[in-house]
Image (cartoon, rainbow, N blue to C red; front, top):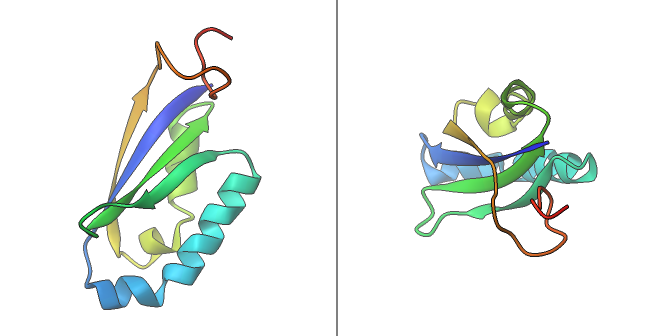
Length: 98
């Protein structure tokens, strides 16, 4: 299992983003329930958001991103960074001590 940082940058006006916010949040909730997402939230200032995800491959995470209404509506660009944690709090997904 690998960890990923999904970095969203809005490419549309916030008014357009806000119109699709509930659909985006529903997508996030589905991914939390499926065990894919670990944390998420808006950037400050509000120019996009960040999602911490876990998955079996980059391809899996790329496929999940395609399901995001922000992606379908061309409201954000996405950068995905895979990383291997070497330190974390005990019990954190991907904890190298486990």
